[in-house]
Image 1 (cartoon, rainbow, N blue to C red):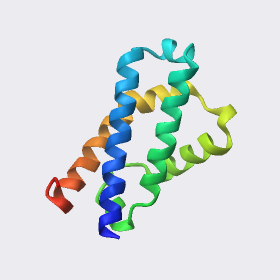
Image 2: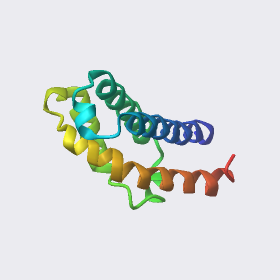
Image 3: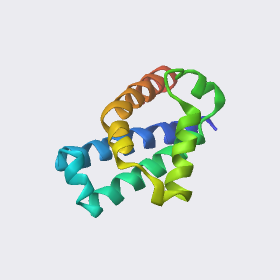
Image 4: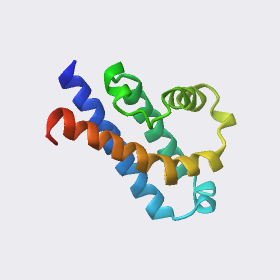
Length: 117
């Protein structure tokens, strides 16, 4: 599972980087709300990122206590099953405030477990 887990961690970082690129291109929540293309791309990346996050081993999750694991699972379920109820204001908050914290935590675990490789 070690090899797979490393792939999941790297995938999480890749998704965060993609979302960051999208948000840098659009710049504001208002522009995202009038761009279904960006909105769809962002939600899709968050969805697949959360799938990788949920596949991490419990020990790895425990090494990142700053991450709200239950909230991630709930948000993933909302995107997948309750997509008409997604509050894009909350998504923007996640993009601009929560994802940088997540990226830092995942990079730390990658460095600790795999020496940055």
